[in-house]
Length: 493
Image (cartoon, rainbow, N blue to C red):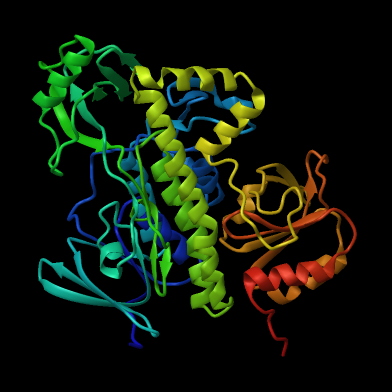
């Protein structure tokens, strides 16, 4: 298997698959996306994304494509109100951005960069060996076979890729069901933060000027046993039983449902096969954590795959994908299960709500929960013994001066390269990094607000800090960090 249709075959053209294709193309490797659906999905389960995803879109110059976005400053944790502004840059995410728009923007960017997207292709088989992967798919013209160096399953909670590879997906089955409808032609009182009644809970959100999203949980109703969505009558009946309000006269645009089934793949990587997004983790959707965790997965994975494919980084760089992202997925699954109990539990959960309410009077608890839900507290272990105060965290988007030009730090990540920021005009540090200049942008900058504690830092292409120095040349540790994340230096001729 030596001739490839693409370096990476991506299964699934949702947000994760499309973002991964864009990341790979930005890094200069080829990407082929195959998708079961013949047309982009027009309906939207997700209606926004988290503060951390805003940063990830921003560092690639994508955030402006969404136009004016409303930021949700006050959200909740399990139905208990929480002001997300307690953390710098914190928010409950962006308001009213349908997933269909997110996918449209990402598909456009991936296409502009040269990714190929094939729709109407449903994966039926997968074979991987030491040279690459072979993906079989049924298509309108008959069976097709695609060859790649690697394959990434971004194909949702029922992932065919995951099943074909045999990766375990342990977790808990559904115990509750939440029905939803996007409806026009009826006025219904908005409940953006949710409203509990004796018979259940409802969330009512505006969808533009003319439509409303209605989500209803009816206490005691068993989850459905099929994948078929509920009828509008079912949703309207349930909403009326829970609230006493009638929406039967409205016109439905789309109905769907989701459950609290929570599962987490035992492996994010098996050889040349990777999982990302819902293929790796499923849970009750709260706070846009699903779409945001999936996008975080592929921003972490894309540059690593590209570096290994181009031969500039060692194979073991790919092992850091599971090591870094599996704990993130675990925390998402855990916190959404806790929120389900707080939010939707019956009278038996009231003592738990009372205790959480007391705990949330403390700033340290509120900061912890905001970081947990918004993804702002993610920190990767870059190397044993190299865990200074900033190592493993994301680069802050502070104002910088480069010569006479002022810009934000995240603008320096647009290229998809690594970044060495020299804040002390240290020639020794810059010279140490010269051997990696084809993979790392070396920038001498001055902080617009010179209150930072570091004289320089090495930042990975995903925006996470891999090395810092508080002052004075530290060429030896920089050399180690550069080799760890970016492979051996160039050989001078």
